[in-house]
Length: 80
Image (cartoon, rainbow, N blue to C red; front, side, top):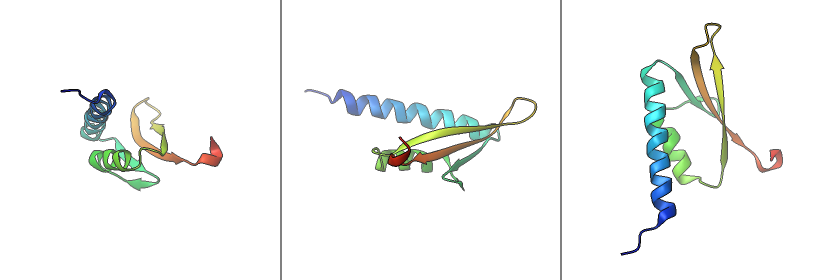
């Protein structure tokens, strides 16, 4: 039986992203998507449903160098 390599790769990438975001959340990092609070699962869900959109990460760092907030901003086509 032939497996779809792209599907397996995407699944692995989403699993890695979920683990990363869950760790940030455990560390108290606020996660936002398009200026709204979001859980790791909400971020993954948007990525799964809207694979054609591109999101840019924006890290908000404290004066001590700790990540306080992680924001995902949708990049519009006209900005590419």
